[in-house]
Image 1 (cartoon, rainbow over the protein chains, first blue to last red):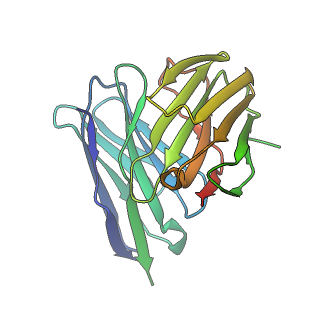
Image 2: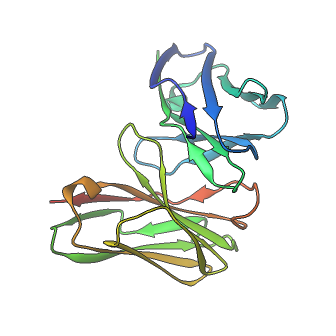
Image 3: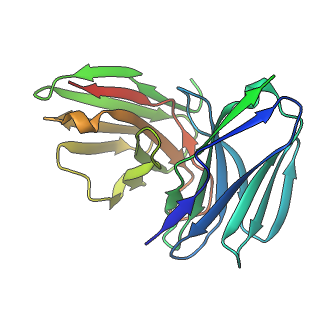
Length: 109
Length: 114
């Protein structure tokens, strides 16, 4: 079966760095997405990785290792507004997104 | 209006009611999706439409009936729902369903079935 695993919840301090991991087992691979979802709001796109390596976009970076079935989202200089759920999703061979259950990130002052 | 809009934002219905959820996208996309999001569970893909044609139905019970009159509008008709159908229903769109483009989501309809 297809499976995406990510931690249920993480806590970090304002101004610090946090890494949210995602491991996957899917039928084929056409890229990995990270989305951010604030409570009661729509998921919004953060990043897309299809090749191995690190993609940096401001305070957020996303890493992919296809051989290990592994990705992480790195958030630097954490701000209170970064408190949200972070969703990992893999696009399988049929171009369907397979979603993880999301990681709720709590930022403390 | 920009992006993807959904109405209503909140809906409470009894098990014998019939209601419809509406989604509209203003992005010029060709693919639209319905997802169900339950607490602490992964998003569940329900239906996919590409160029108004249904291309995916992930074993969704017949009490959920989608309709896509054109590439910009998507409906989800609901009838004789069960309490376990209470969830956040998200609509999304993308350029097309056969590519690796990102999906853009609406704010969702919070559905409660009594």
